[in-house]
Amino acid sequence: MNEPKTLADRIEDLLPQTQCTKCGYDGCRPYAEAVAAGTANYNQCPPGGAEGVERLATLLGKPVIPINPVNGVERARPVAFIDEQVCIGCTLCMQACPVDAIVGGPKQMHTIVKDLCTGCDLCVPPCPVDCIAMIPVTGDATGWDAWTQQQADDARLRHDRRQARLAAERDAAEARAAARRAAAAAAPASGAQEAQRAQPDAATAPAAAAPQPAPADDAEAKKKAIIQAALERARQKKAELSARGEGPRNTEQVSADVQAQIDAAEARRKRLGIAASPDGKTGDASDDTNGNSSDQPSGGDKPA
Image (cartoon, rainbow, N blue to C red; front, top):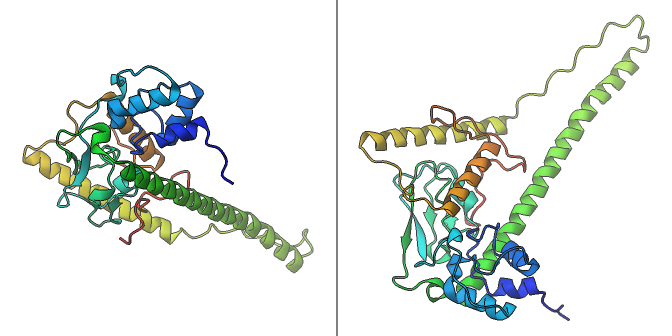
């Protein structure tokens, strides 16, 4: 027997499931929980538009109010487009896509699966070569007129599956890291026991040789080399664009919510070790705190 739905469940059912974070929360579910708890208003979802506000107002027994302009405006639904001639295969857009709508791999051209894209804009800020544009595809149709319940249900399912996969990857990475730490801690103790058995007379035995550091992890070195090469190609491409008098795209009239996404992307890149230096260049990269490396795609179940 199914358990009765909570208020948060019913609110989530009425959201478009674009997972765009324009509401100020990490996704549709956290926003639904905040509305149910009374810590967020029911007019903070631009993709749902005026009809979305009306749906929530009816459920909550409250008056219909305009969308909060701080969160954005109702608009025609866009779809991301990647300029494949400029893409460097850094995978950052794939890591940002909440519904696995981007296909590609490290150092390989990426492309958008148009029918899966929710138009969330989250892939635009992390792109180091500004090769992603958001193109409206629904004409004058906006909000729920530009989106269907079936599309919302499909996007929700892809988002939930992605979240489950990322959680499993984090757990596996943490388990590997714990195993490495345990092995490193056990190695000196085992060496000391062997030395004791071989030379029981500590007073006359020569000093034990200091343990040698473990050899560098070739896999980690390879990851860093791949990322560094991709970043170097990005710098060269930016220089070429600058020489032709072409500036970065997607940077004009940046709204507050997009700027917040950019700030979040920069914070994530700093955690990955891809921090911008004062001269505008990008530094080395390393594993993030979850054990995920920035050269590993986290979007899409299709092969690279």
